[in-house]
Length: 470
Image (tube, rainbow, N blue to C red; front, side, top):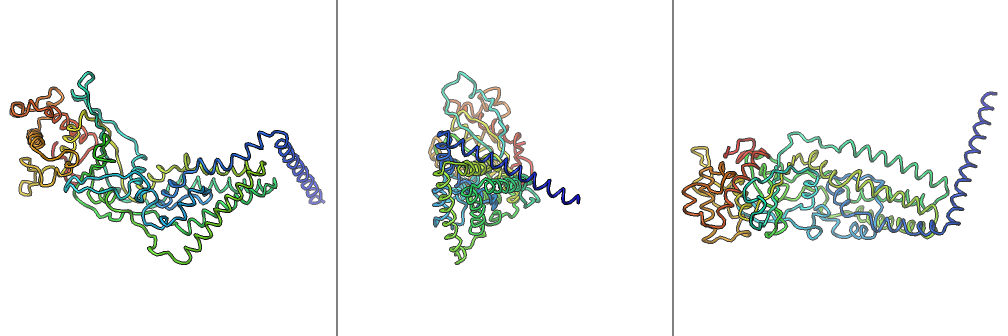
């Protein structure tokens, strides 16, 4: 008896709700018919959102690096489809690390002077962008206002160290956002079906199916470093876009991980030769991308609620990529939890190119040879090859030889302790080199190197050791 009454009340309430919902849908349809601007907006939004605002190359790069992009966030633009289905998509490097896909990064080895392009330039930039910069001010007289015109050089020192036990798992925020996205997608799919927006319903089903096929065709585990063996020596590597640059980066840290980050490609588990299954998945992916665009164009041409629902989901995917799961967040997750590398950035400025070079010479742990008998640096001469990294910036010659000798004497005497007070280094060097235009920049470089060593806690030649200059 009570169950029968409850059933009648339930069905009556359901009928009332459906009637109210149908009335709301009918009022929306009438709104579109009576307002032409809403129809015109509906015809523009889906296609403009798909074409203009989806950064698929960077998303693919993160996917190649970390192997994790939510399956529900894969609307694909025409340009993105060309990138996904091109022959380059089968290469071992991450998307934007491939030659010609991003700005190259030239590296100069501080020990041997070797020059090479960075193996993973865009990955390196993303990892650096995920870290904050600490400013180390230049207090030398050369930087004071009112001095002569300066060719200011920006120097960023990146301290590279190793995590002892990386977690090898994605962050909690990734899983939280991924689950929330699935919940919102399910609600939007149900809403589109109830509102009889079948074009939007089909689009919302095709997008996660596209993501699933992309994962099956190209998915891989997060990439580890190719070589992660421990080393007891530090290495300095200078990087710039070109050798006449005004913005320079110096990577300083354990030689094995510095070389693995800059010189060696990241390890890839993708097979060198693709199977029949992979080729079949590529054809299926091509069909799904065409289906996405057919449904988006059809929704735009109908100028109704379908277009707004399609636009809503495309914007959801864009927002998740730009704000919720940005590339730099994925890069931070990768370098911390999978590569096991800790980066610290320290920014400073130098008044001239010579001051920059003096700073790098003083920071380089391989500038002087190591005397095994005394267990100290031999500061009476430079290490063979220790200054070759400088050759493309400042060619060898008589003037450079005089400057190198003056710099070596200044570092040997540790005269930088008075550099904040005056330009003079010592009586000996004042008499011999005091009239040279580059003389005043030596003290600035040595001073800034000391400040950077203390601020960044650089450990000198050996990992975990003390700086030889302290």
